[in-house]
Length: 106
Image 1: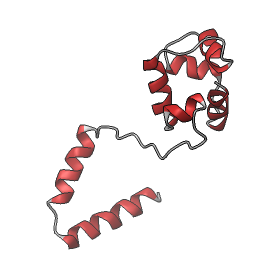
Image 2: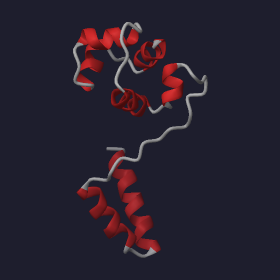
Image 3: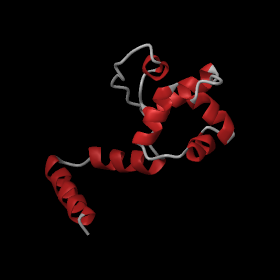
């Protein structure tokens, strides 16, 4: 799967990084990249999610990577902030945004 190599390099990751990420040995990951062995279906789906591409793109069945976005669950803290924010008036929401923008520039 040469696309594994390309996608990994685009992200500046090593084979070791990928092996750790997917809980396999470096030689196993190397074998996937060099098409000596194939990942399981579950591993293939996890790789596609990791790189935010379709499985078809990853295995070379399509040249279109797709616009895959993975919805990750919000943390409890983020949910709490959003709940508090949504209860505010439009004027207070604007004030919060201004405060956050000023804080982020520190």
